[in-house]
Length: 500
Image (cartoon, rainbow, N blue to C red; front, side, top):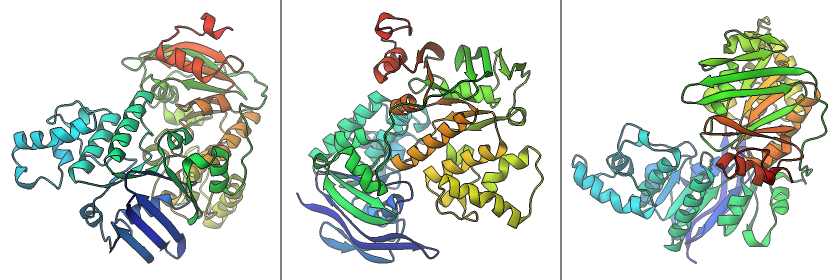
């Protein structure tokens, strides 16, 4: 196969910190080339270099065998390179056709009928059956992702970069994405694919390149390596395998929810969480898991129901009140809701303690409090003055966990604890959650990753269409049983298939 793109001896530094060191990467026509590495390994920097968002300090880039200099994404697009970001870059108020042709309208800029006709073949190619004149805001996330791919095709891209493309998709939508990827590679398009999910790598990738600490560790054929070997390349060590949670001794009921309802979101939710226990709400996207956690924390109002903390009714829950009553909340969207992006790590770690009424401290005293905790949790780099948005997702999540550790919460609500986090950081966060439960913290979490649900949970509550439809003990739980409840293949955890 012909070589579409090559990066040789790429070096890149920011503020004196070396992020990429002598990195090599090639992409062949018609292949899916997966890029793996821990958060902070340099994947995003390499992708942005290949898309013209960063200029390398040294090294060469070639496209179709010719040396190129990419000063901007526009330069990259002129070379036939397109990038589909994890956070989609569409304009919600514009139509599908306008988004597909944005910056590429030509003479049809104001002729909407001709724009729609021009876009239709690209929508058909990606299997998107929506009207070109429909506003993008009315599409699902999966449909918006297909619009992004259609835009790449409209620009005649032969190199497409996909960064965590399935992070917000259902199982059915992921299968549709797989079909589109295979159709594209069959026409000679080369795809650079970034994912933390090994099942996606096995399903799609021809070759895999692994980065660690900004360096090229190796490029291998996917069929020639095991998951364990890829993990070892990524982290430089073997991870301790653990299929289920450690044995835990549950204490008294810390959280009791009775008949909680919110119109249009969920109905009649009742559950208990004991001290020292991890309970997970599982279910398909849209089942109402996030909405239940937000309502318990007081971030959203409810129509009816009751919440008790340590046996006392919380009459009008609000985030401020719940925080003062010892409840922490880690939202799904770290970037928008979990951190103050342009503040330092030390400030982000101390936010909850200050909000609970702790006196502010001098700069040197704050560093003295924060640095040991950063070292203990393995937050890299171990620099309290680092701006948090410059940390990887896994390290940002550790900072948020550290914030609630410092606040001494007794109940912790966690929504998607490891979304977009690499395998090694996942292991670290699992260990932190285990440690919190061992200290008697009651943990209620929501997760769409079934291996994660099975690894962490003492009990699993399954939601479907806004209702709790079953509860599985650790002994009962399996991926098949959770999915059967979540999809309605069975209607209750007491059905015969679940009581074998």
